[in-house]
Image (cartoon, rainbow, N blue to C red; front, top):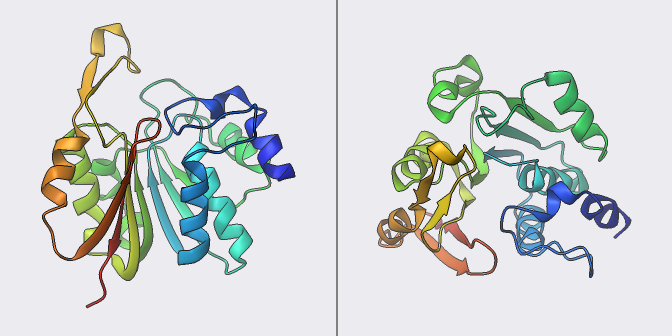
Length: 211
């Protein structure tokens, strides 16, 4: 709990719709992210997008606590601002929370899948999609890693319950979240189990069914 207290003492981690709160040291939906990664024990996790690292850090913390030498690849091109643009500052931010198992890539998913780093991924056990929140991009993000998903993989989509107008990229670049439209299509698949949580901006959790 001391780690959670330290984590939530930073205002950056009380934003972006995970139903978290400082008054009761509550990670909100973050408890689910952490718990699933503890249960799933991923060796290889992928997180696409994050404002200040709330999700990748909680997943990385779970991986660290699993003590299985797992790693997390964090993909974010830092288009909203410059927070992720300086590698030394990014590493220092993660190390502040005693996390050394996060590997950040300053790329979009489209750019990452063209890289050598992508070619070296053997499998993915945990995939969290929280990048550009359109149905089209969420679909692209998922399909980029679908063939790499392990038999017990979890796939989570954030901001996936309802439409929302976002101005995170500036007043002149407002757009509407439409991930919920892709979720309506995704739920028709019979190779995934799913459950949704409407708290905060909402998250859709899918677990791959064993063959």
